[in-house]
Image (cartoon, rainbow, N blue to C red; front, side, top):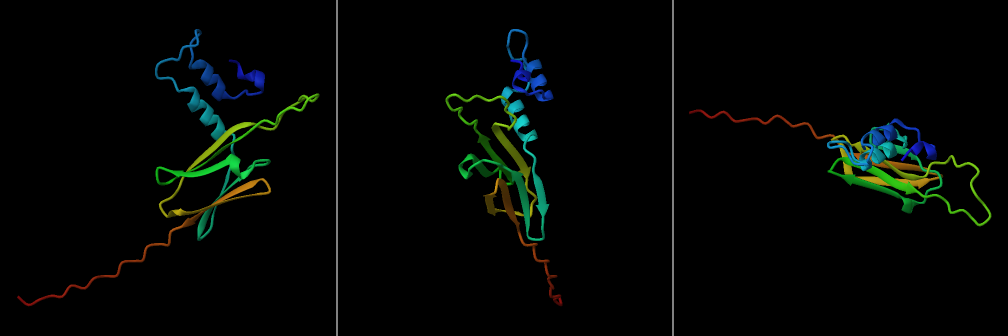
Length: 154
């Protein structure tokens, strides 16, 4: 399927077309369609990452989405996954789109969290179309005190 008809002229889609032969069969060892769709969803979801002395903040624009459309998860112990879907508005009778530029479809971002991230203390707030995910940092480990060993007379 030529995705340029839908306004998608991304190199990812050209690779997807190349992964299928002329009969529509998948090549052995070729990346799957899901892989390319996930890659596109990640590439089109920009994020800002801030670090403060006490936390990491991930900021992503989510205009027009409700909290039920956004999913924030931790997988594999240290991977923060932010995903969801923006659905197309239903056309009302007598109306049709003359132009559609706002992005619809799935979005996803994965972030590998550093070792000092406290995955048990994660907060997600969506306000005015901006999602802010705050991951608190673990306190630094206390330095080990030297242990004194008593020398015995033998």
